Amino acid sequence: MLSILRHRTYRHLLIAQIVALAGTGLATVALSLLAYDLAGSDASAVLGTALALKMTAYIGIAPVVGALADRIPRRALLVSADLIRAAAALALPFVTQVWQVYALILLLQAASAAFTPTFQATIPDVLPDERDYTRALSLSRLAYDLENLFSPLLAAALLTLVSPSLLFAGTALGFLASGALVLSVLLPRPAPVERTGGLYAKAGFGTRLVLATPRLRALIALDLAVAAGGAMVLVDTVVLVRDTLGRTAGDVSLALGAYGAGSMVVALALPRALDRHRERTLMLPAAFALTAVLTLLALAPVLARLTPAAPPEPLSGAGTDPSAPAWSWPALLAAWLILGAAGSAVSTPAGRLLRRSARAADLPAVFAARFSLTHGCWLLTYPLAGWTAARAGLAASAAVLAGVALVAAVAAVCLWPRADPDALEHVHPELAPGHPHLAGADRCHAHDFRIDSLHPRGVTARSWNGRSAA
Image 1 (cartoon, rainbow, N blue to C red):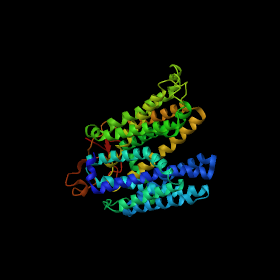
Image 2: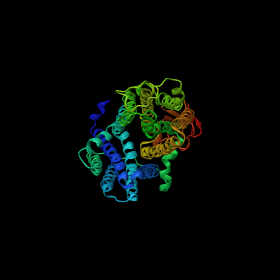
Image 3: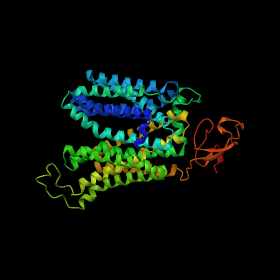
Image 4: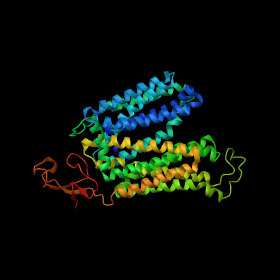
């Protein structure tokens, strides 16, 4: 898998992604500390609003940037986004009012909403071979997981040497280094876009394409299942570990580490698996695995009443809840490991589906649309996990999220045709025999199912432009 690092452009882009993610991780810790300094006991409300602004920026701005991507050179767009993020991070230590935090976070996340889908849409052009691209997706997944695992550790180490406000300087350095790495390579120019209409129509094109393509509709449903499992982990872990199981603060990190470890193991294994199996074969069972784990979590109180409590451990078990069954802690680690693995099995191959479903010219719009729709799923499941747990308990939260994941998984099965061939045979009676799209063939030819100006209709994979695919 590491052989693709011989490709200089991709190597620089991957390192740029890693250092920017490290900067983002530092910013997460620093923002928590800043919120506490400004708001005290209301810090959680400040952070909750900041996360809501983040999701709002991702959902609203990414499609607009995707619509404008063909007008702005990719390298200029990526570097400009990094410079804006660095400037916002450098300004955060100097704020004195909560509203200033919100304004800078909105600016920073708007730049991230421009950077991330553009970056994702660039990689398929840099690595046109599908095997190389698959390995790049796995490395990208690993980069995200390593950021989740090691950025808090890096922040903790730095806090022993510097003041919390200097963490924002580390964030800015990460973004500046990312911009310098992007600037050091030449990026392929995006293919010319033939879409017509105003900005609103162009911004909505990617979403229309995603919703008109069966496998991509299924992908959004799968993203909802991943968001249900991920919200359970990211929102409820601290309460599960500290209150329900009565364990130490360090065990919270271990539980989150198990989630990241599961994701990394699958990301490393997926390239070989995808050489032998189609995405549908791997992704749909993963969604049902998410549902199964969440269902078991919802049933955990019932199972706990049927088993004896853990024996007291006066020497090494300080801080644990003696009423918790002996299996509760290893079971939680196993559950989080499976949730991470199943989420990675869905998220990592997603880029292959997007690439297969759109022309090169439409990739920025499609990646931006999926970025926006996916974060819409998280915007639903984050508060659902938190509010349900606070008002009805963790078991109820797991049950509700299990229901969401089940509905999403069943929808994905229904939306993704079992017969989803690499090429669909279809006809173009409206095109002249010498049209470039036909590439010298007759009006009947075959290629991947795509929605574009020449294929505006496409409700199912078996019906394309009103004709049955052979």
